Image (cartoon, rainbow, N blue to C red; front, side, top):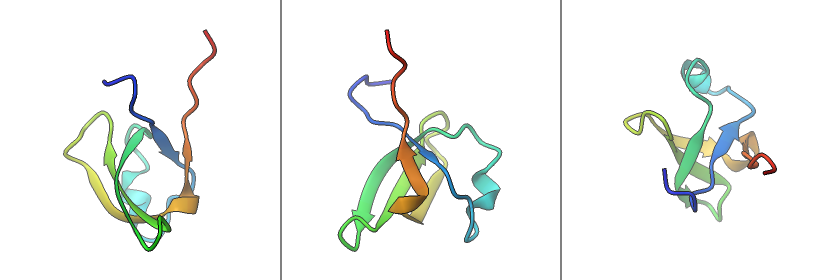
Length: 67
């Protein structure tokens, strides 16, 4: 994976997104709408898994571990 790509984790699984809860919780933002309030995500492990719309407040960045 490109080290420059920011990964995110979902912190609230609701509104039909519960079906993604069992997956690796590491996501890449692929787009945004409504001034960034809604975003689309792609799973960083299985890139065929896409969430077309989720509120941006339901995710948070995955911070890198200190070296």
